[in-house]
Length: 324
Image (tube, rainbow, N blue to C red; front, side):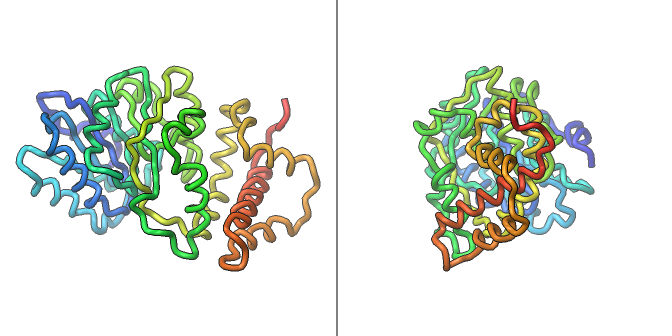
């Protein structure tokens, strides 16, 4: 199925919702998230001012996702969950899945949520509505780990990174609005987003949200508020490291599109140093082993080794001049 086929088959209501909540997923069980969001919507003075759309992004088996449709039909009367099952022969990817949801949506404002998030407090939807309405503003609610249990021993790297770089209050995020943007929980007017969609040339995991933030900041303001969701998924150390390795191609595209902004990254300072010095052939595997050395090396030291390893991998992926 093509995204345009979904668009043509999307039923249109008589009223335009104020808010469309959009959740792309591949194989995440989104029923708990949908149930909490629907319970939140049901408390609003005008529940029908909000629609909730779920896109199943190319999962060939759709295993476990039929419950999304069941949840839609058994919710409080008048509350309709539009659950769009998208049995594509291939995965759309993070950017195009969101772009497709935006085209399917009818709301004046779009609220994008990742499928592995859960609102930190009741009243999440009402607070989002209170912050919506300015078409020239992107509003970011933030992400924490409040509701997620502590990470297991083999998933400490991402948790430690998140505590330092992602799970931070709005006041801190507003010091660098574009640099701290995350696509896990943000709002934009539908017209604004359709005029400036995600770049679907970014494939796989990583950097498509950073690129969008840099681009959208040229035409809109980015404001961070405290209306957070908890990240409910633990990324295993080896899995996260693998994602970082595969994201080098996306970082190369980010640098090609926004070289001046990328040169200001903390990570780029390490990349430049690696580019200017000869590195030993065994350095990369050594850094990789240190990063994955669970229990023997403090997690902060392991995270530093991972960042050095990431910089080294990215250095090899950048065919451009790093100066100028």
